[in-house]
Length: 269
Image (cartoon, rainbow, N blue to C red; front, side, top):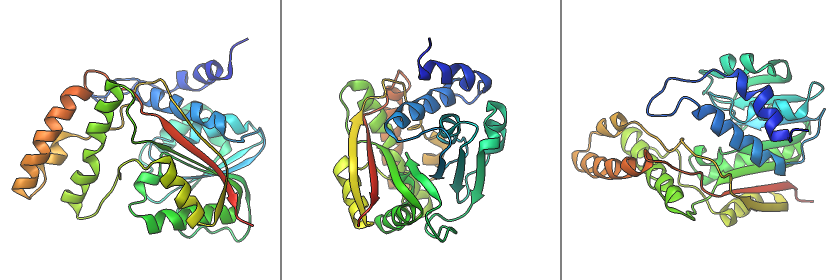
């Protein structure tokens, strides 16, 4: 009998077409989605439950594993403020679209007046919330509308050279976006201790937490060189181009997903 991960790959990932987006490999989306599936094994997901997903993103990387795990009787309400470009296309080909309800809104003010979900999840999305105030507000809202909250983020840890190569390229993103747009985005990965403190400030109590090694390649550190070339500050542009060239040279050889931290929490009291 195949294990659940193998079934997921056969039932869902095989339906998603390969993508032509060099320098990313054609199967990059499949690999990233498989990582989400693996980390969700630590979440209390059962068939038939209702899940709120914050920050579903353009490629539904976590949405599809969630929809697969809740089964035909379950539902996933997928929330994002603006990133919907490929969402419809990808969810349609996988066969789980009927289980997904997409909502375009700001997660700092969720339109649910009471606890409407068995579980709320934020997977690899904390780093996109730009500042601690927003992180706390979003987590607080998740705790308000769900019985439990499951938060996942990559950790700033490298246990080998391939993981170090990923971190070197990824850590340029915050500086590049700040230089381009005047505000930070794709923040550096937080420690597990930092995540726990954010949960506590949001009014949560940590039920369980842990770390795991995905054991997979990781491609989402990549940022096009053209972004760096667009920085107007000449000195900053030259510095970041030098660092990008060095980091990209290592990244393109082969990179590995860094360790991932996860936290399961509920509202205090």
